[in-house]
Image (cartoon, rainbow, N blue to C red; front, side, top):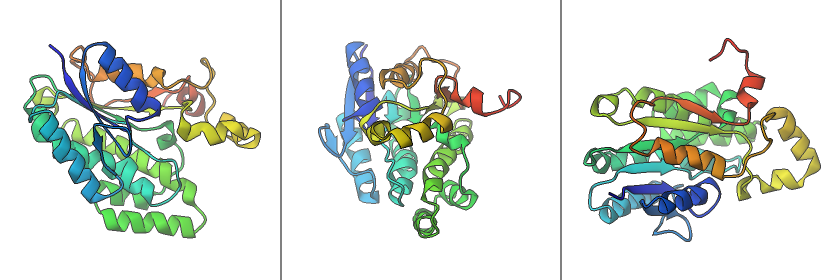
Length: 258
């Protein structure tokens, strides 16, 4: 039978590639984005997130087989706190009743290899505590302090930690529900286009995210993994941060870190 799967950030990049893969295998996809989606919602706001939850719940008739959160922003600002972190955790929490109504629900979220890079411990703690206002204030302070590049890795590190804690909480593993994170390296999407077009920025990216296996990836590479993670075939993989990075994480971190 076709499965019903909601995908945020569906209008471009990894999300759009995933939608194509899911639909090609016969799944019904409920798309969520700011434009060109079944549900047009701004995940940067609490009202937008609530609207997305209500809209998905209505469209799936209260039974959701899978959720993949691809929505994100690379703009170094407090917006990252709202979209990259709360745009995932609040949707997962809000849609949990619909997911629980499925006989084989699966959840996967898009993190980043940047979660392994230097981040702001205070911001991570605020995110994990669910303190939205304090977290956005801390992100604004990082911008004012000249450290805006700490925000993105902080949101992705917090997302990975949240998933690893949540996946074994009541109602998840004990209910047969896998929850996983993928951590892409450099993916050739509209979000990364500016980096690719600037030779100096590309050199910085090459050094920060070395990808010896096949270089930078097309969005289909992480999308294929996401499609499997939310399929019924995934019966035992949960709580994992899976790097789709052409070997970058293995290059950057010592072998004993596994």
